[in-house]
Image (tube, rainbow, N blue to C red; front, side):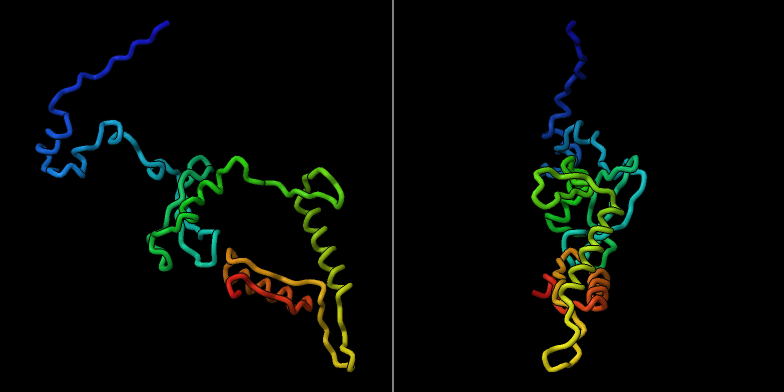
Length: 194
């Protein structure tokens, strides 16, 4: 079955040159050269259910973002003009945040591969946290140094260390520093300082 579609009659008065002269857009850089299809397009931000303020996850600068959500799904992420840090601008990585959130290959489960295993398995969050805590405490215990050779108190561990990344903000780095220092670690560093 062949489907026929009616095409609207095209008037020479709608040619871009005539629209330029009619509208005063003599250089043809404005609405005079915009097609009807382009004029009918609506931005994704106009149909969003809500806008949530956020911070870009890629580095420690902390650029402000506006996250546009429709039907509980992120549809667009743009720079927040009210942010005193970025004033509405985002770098190429920050501008691609929406792709990071909606990528179909994004890992959304906790994956674990046991030593010498050939396959990954999914873990629930509580099991993964317990495994990390057990390993942290065991490494701390095995690397503990209570005193040096002269009998002076050390009360430190060489079994754990921390290397923070630039995606962590100041508050997260502060809490990591407090946690690792309280655990006796002295090897605490951050990529932003290196």
